[in-house]
Image 1: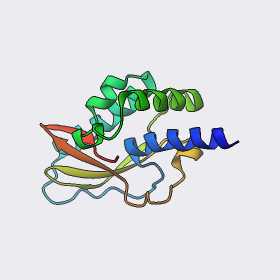
Image 2 (image 1 turned 45 degrees about the horizontal axis):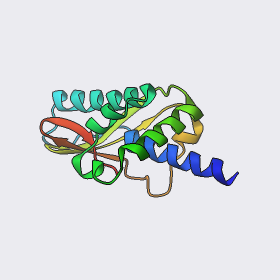
Image 3 (image 1 turned 180 degrees about the horizontal axis):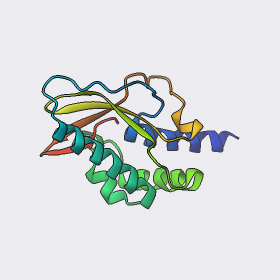
Length: 142
């Protein structure tokens, strides 16, 4: 039971950095947000979800901020993605709310339809942070 709880916690942590699952809130794009910026952010979140489903660690790292890449090794990420795929199979992003967006950062929340993933976790009230680096949205929730 203890091992399964640890696996579930690790898998959930990875997915929370993708979407901060667990919200039914409506998105609120802040000042300076453009439809193009929102579209690019939505695409980046979906691309990262697709990379998780494909087990493509290189793509996941590319969609992760420099700051967060320095905190997690490729080996740790590979193990976590493998566990996530074993536990949940392909995960579909059912909804994505953009809670905040500006020139270089954003906060998003999403749902997957998987109760264990959509349930809010302690400290998950604000959503997942994303950063715009070199013209590309990357998760910055590490």
